[in-house]
Length: 336
Image 1 (cartoon, rainbow, N blue to C red):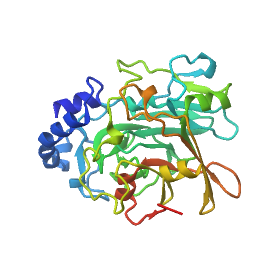
Image 2: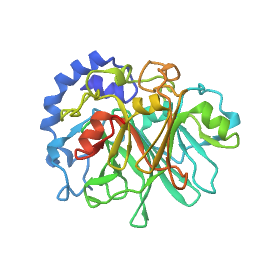
Image 3: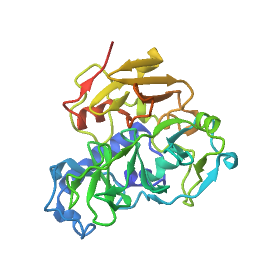
Image 4: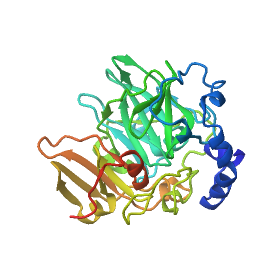
């Protein structure tokens, strides 16, 4: 457990083999601790009498509450001032109507997972779960009230469990839904952002903003999950694998409860289906491949637009196992 905790807090880097061995030794106490009695000292303000999932499904990911520190209101710099990002490095892009586009580099989100920001009148949560490759923007308002989010240190189906600081309710990142506490059953609105290369963002938005390097002692630009997206199985996941031949760590593009394999979209370059237009282009590195974020293999960039309006649609480029875990009745678009 100490080695897992150290890796996720940025103090060391684990290979898939060493991570798996450490996980085997650590999993029994993690499962045993999956109950409110063990959590209450760390979470005195969470109402554990309200929940929508079995507590046994929630495991410790290693770090404690806020052991992976979320970033609040990050420093933003002009695109022209950014000099550390490689051209193929991935960024999370959000272009809200009437606002200056913003890019949030994955080299920072690998170590922080959540950024609380405000764009114009919209409070935004920028979220990235490396274990699911799930990169989603949420509106931070719940019932008209603004919330700010932190990293709980807990996982469910290998996906980050977030918490809001106001009520200390727990939220499932990949679906944006409250699962423990007073916000159980509430769902965050998703915003239409996407993942792309720094070069693409910079070329399209020369007057845009980019998140500056946070003031934390982290090895930014290094990947603490070396080789993860080519591993045989996801870490800290004990559920069913996808019921098809698709590899559990293959990327799929989810829109609603439908998933298209990214490889299919790469082969076709452009695809129209279900009233949606998908386009793929080369140039974005995987942040979960080599130790150097900028040198990961090319997984490309996907854009997802409404066929009728041409507007970008909320979506997620997630791993196949995560889609199956959180959308068990979802539809798979594996072939034409």
